[in-house]
Image (cartoon, rainbow, N blue to C red; front, side, top):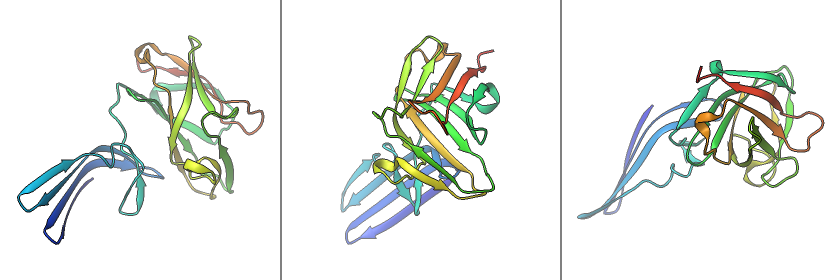
Length: 203
């Protein structure tokens, strides 16, 4: 996907360029963005909006994903067991800023009500690798719940797919991780737990 916009406001001309790739519900972006403002003979270049994520592009909530040091796609992931058969892991990415997990809530024939707990909560999601290292959730994109920053309760309508991109504390040993579990804190029922997730991209 490529987009270029130019607009004039009095003696200022702004040119916005965006190149990327977007999929899913909601959209997430792989790409880059630049903005050039020209005022008479002066001009400045800015690269700020999408670098932080959560910007609005043509009324779609979008997130520019950071460069990955290691990406493990669904076909290279094996999950030993999961507590909700309607949720799957589509991708795991390791960046300098975060350990990313992309979840897919599959279409079901009835509304699904779920709760994503905010960082610091006893019920907040975290990751535990085979060496015992823990990575707490730090942010998310895609969940539009009733609490601040999109956490809290959200209803996914029947027959609707929903992506949820979770960001956990970064893993310094990303290249050696072969097994991890995604755990929903102190949850006992209706949990989003994935146990013994094997990363087989290195085989």
